Amino acid sequence: MKNLGSDFILNRMTALHPKVIDLTLDRVWSLLDSLGNPQNNLPKVIHIAGTNGKGSTLSMLRAGLNEIGLKNPCLYFTSFGSIPRTYSAEQQFYR
Image (spheres, rainbow, N blue to C red):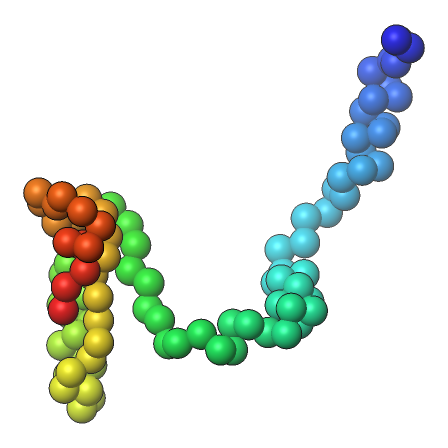
């Protein structure tokens, strides 16, 4: 095996990885566009995640939606670990 110096390896890695990180979503939008924008066909979703406060966040969200006239918002709380004593994945879903 050829012995490669550290300078060669560092230069090679630097050439392969850009020094400037692109923090925009342009690459994501380009990918979605090339896939036919599948996100436009998804139902409206609100994802509540985190360690604590999901139940109270859901309750506040449901109350707010009721206040603006959505009397039966179809909201599901599906976070594993939030409902004690669950025996199957189906038990995680309720209205």
